[in-house]
Length: 325
Image 1 (cartoon, rainbow, N blue to C red):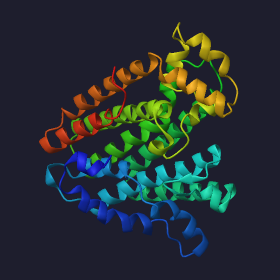
Image 2 (tube, rainbow, N blue to C red):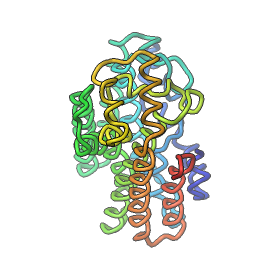
Image 3 (cartoon, rainbow, N blue to C red):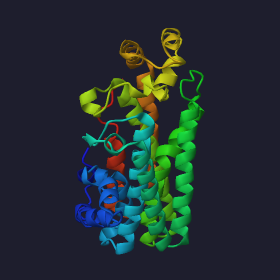
């Protein structure tokens, strides 16, 4: 998905081009080794989805991004990058964005400390943008950690509830999406009703984003995903499609004995097949559609027609490629 093309906002490409050198400069210290580590994933590229959300909010009605807008976008991307450094350590990942992961190349300890450094730089930038943004980003970091702990605590638990899943993804994914939109709205000085509408859009968009990712982990291929399919299943992270399949009277009894422990490749493939061919996929897609509708409703409260329609298209685009009933 090309985020900027879907949004259709003419200034975003230009603003992203301004963002890239600022993003790199924000983590360069002059220490050659540290600079290599902290810029590793920046150089690898990425969708820059969170900065796009921040800049889209900040540049509504054709307004050019200010330095404060750009720094707000940098701050949220640094938080996201730090989370990737830490996630790859936890997942023992070897690849990220088609390059060797930081932990694989430099070791777990360096990856953890470098991720902490990125968080520190994000906090420093946020502090320079004012107390409201600094407090918002600090709360978001807490939400991210809480969501991750919720997920880790539920590993291999076949009795995990949908509420537990929802709380986890609200923290680990949706909170930063919401904060990205909110920071852009704040740096732009938008009226409070628009700030709240954009925050709601970001939160519901983030929930949709994670539900979609979790569906694709079951039905997608390794080529499409850029990682082994069914990885969450193998690691005991039981997401919405799996939980719904476990609760299904026709496939639940067959699926349940496979879960609750790490899976080898044959067991992973069997479990994926059970979930992928069950009614749980259609039910998960329906949940995604409900989040997309809420995101579009939030965007509909914005006065700028271009931003309003662009955000609605962005939410709708996440439903493309998902199985249809």
